[in-house]
Image 1 (cartoon, helix red, strand yellow):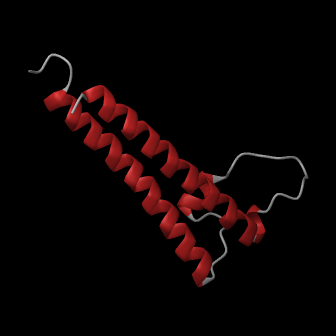
Image 2: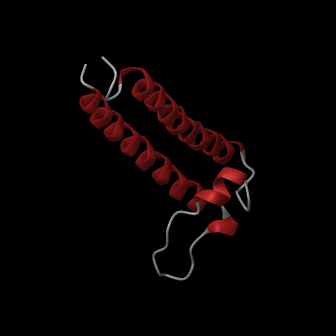
Amino acid sequence: MDIYLLAGVWALAMVAIFILAIRLSYRIEARSQGLQNRSGIPRNAMMFHTVLNINVARDAQTQAMRRRMNLLLLVIVAGFILLAVAIKFAGPGNP
């Protein structure tokens, strides 16, 4: 398989997974009293807070959502590592 095709498919997969993590972060914020946006002005997802469990609601369902979001972010990190390995062994300059 061509490395450029692999990189394109990888990029689409990573963007899709990151969008899922962002949407999950917004759902966690809506359930957490300390993270709710009351200003009426749209803001970015507070992923740093949700990853580190800062001001996140302590109920079981919200914590399960937070663990799922952390898992999605770990999948992204693993994807970067796998792509680096693929480029190392099958990248440009390698026969």
